[in-house]
Length: 69
Image: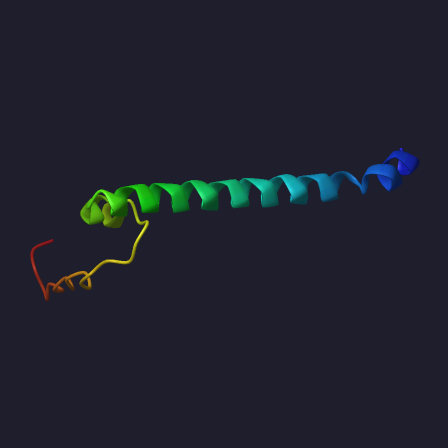
């Protein structure tokens, strides 16, 4: 078993490589979706999906003081 690990770089190496490949693929899909939506003027949809930063900051919620239990 140890010789097999030496050959392929170990089991953990394969997992890291797969995770890295998934991250790269996800980033490419997000870039494609972002460019598609922005090219068609769907900025609001891209913002809802979290592909772009919001144009205006989110409103702050007011805290309630006291109140019924």
